Length: 151
Image (cartoon, rainbow, N blue to C red):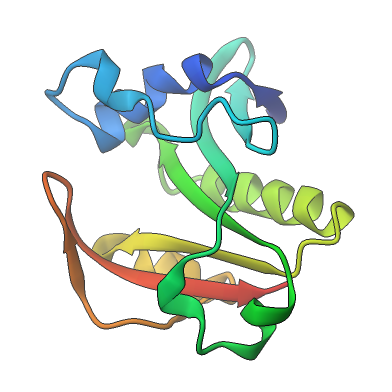
């Protein structure tokens, strides 16, 4: 059984590193804003092992200003979404995303957005997110699209 819990930023590193920062130093797993009081991190656990993570950061992105819902409400950015390769395709990412959405709805947050790697776009589209940007490159990470969902 998969259990989703709130975790610390540091607890996300054992999943962030092999999935998102492969071959890079551990300090590259720390993201700006990880320690802010408005930021929260979720971990997916199988027994006592963390197998998936995501982070939610209060953040308005200037490129989203054209979206009316965005202008009216506080927004959160989802980032650092990762599931260990051996556990992918088992619904863990979906459970993490649903829990993040639930917690954001409880905070009356109406807009969630993120930078999605190309390979992840179909997953997010199935979850009701839409692309709102042209393709862009995040240096040392790769090609991305901005995606958004009004909760």
